[in-house]
Image (cartoon, rainbow, N blue to C red; front, side, top):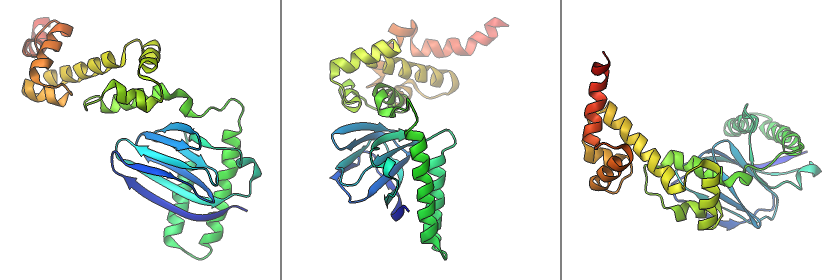
Length: 256
């Protein structure tokens, strides 16, 4: 039977690095919130909300958390021999089967009612049987195989922050040139162009739907300053931000 040694819910600040270490037991780390990378043995993986790391005994591993993150992790001994060959970062299913079971286990651990140890072990066995089904399924691939998609997800959430193409390439695990090539091939724009269009679309929305000054919109959308913002906006949209705002207010009346 599987044996649970500990189960912990924790939060990590943005930019947290957990140095390489190892355990004598299995560890399953579920990423409830956050994005980042996880090194397991010689391989590097990306994680996002809804993914989980499965780390066998004595595998050195580390984590880099980009934004604030929340994790739920359990250490356990496993009696299921077919789990021994599994390691990596994987996706939970659409029903969040792994997460919901871990949450039940965590609640049971906190309450410590009669028989909670036996129940935790049974619930852990439930998870390992499920993992055997999920990860042993033919054709299943770790989401780490789609590293460029993870970087795109991160860009979609953080495009208003200062991001360099080099830091995004580092996150992907590819070289600068290789990352730019793969990104453009996959999504039709260079990473720099993609970020620019995201920022411009956000700025357009603020111009149309708020009364924020242009300088504040420039900062909110992630531009260096309002002069750069105005120059780029006019070059790409064909109008100054102020003219665009005026036209967006008058267009409905012109239609009538």
